[in-house]
Image (cartoon, rainbow, N blue to C red):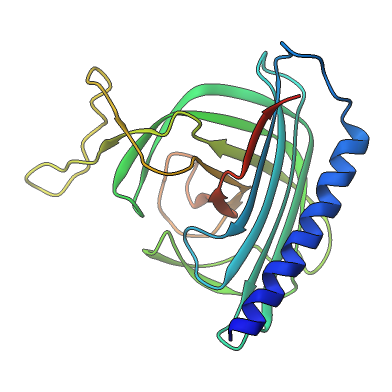
Length: 227
């Protein structure tokens, strides 16, 4: 098992090097003081075991010219690859740097989250692969039948690592974040989440439309630089 995992890590790093090389070719280096930033996250998924991710994004903090590439691989316990998702965004926009949302994995409200979004493309393995979304809801991951298809591609990242502990009322309802109070700072590195907004068919409104969920790889940020 260790050998297989090391093999996966090696393949992930090779693929990441390829993506970074391509990004370097299409992205001119900017002088100091530029308002463009490059984000790279390479490693294990924070939500799902036996999953490796690559996320590379470039954002213009003025609001336009956002680009994104991501690649997620999910393996079974034997080390066999059972699902992949790839996505790209060429002309996205930075919608806000003050997005906040509830994370059931850490049971916190993340705040000051940068939200990049646009019309991009996604391609997945031709299989109906089921997971438990954020360790709670069973759902089937997107299946594009092995073909590239148009999709609403997004990226969230939290450079300040600020958050509030989630609280519930006496009836178990989630309370809104106390934005007038000083936030806490999460230890460790910042995280990056990239993916697509996908109609899962679940008859619930999660704030993005009935049944619509943000689905994709999430990893700790390994590089954050001005370009």
